[in-house]
Image 1 (cartoon, one colour):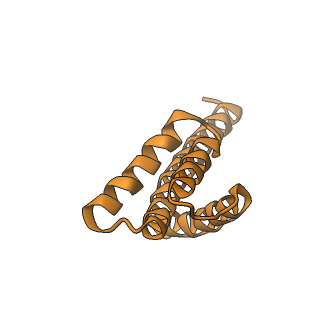
Image 2 (cartoon, one colour):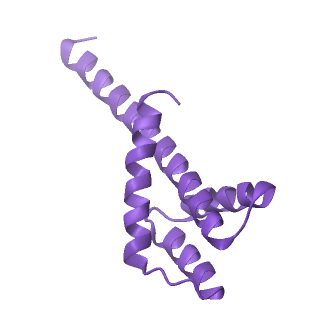
Length: 107
């Protein structure tokens, strides 16, 4: 193997590792926002855990955040809880930062 081949393999491994960390952070973020939304909806215990798990499943359907935001918005509107999509996206961003830190720390 040449130096160029070794470098290419290294870059591919680094890319795969970064993609894995990003996936884990998104899953963690959606669990966090799921628990946050559940608390706002008055959902507790096992039902809150199920709601958070549903958020993880929603993140696997599409590559963007729209499905998660739409589900939370829909659920909030169903109980007349006023949160704009913008505010939900801000929470999503904050939870993403937290999730990335937790994943980087190995949590």
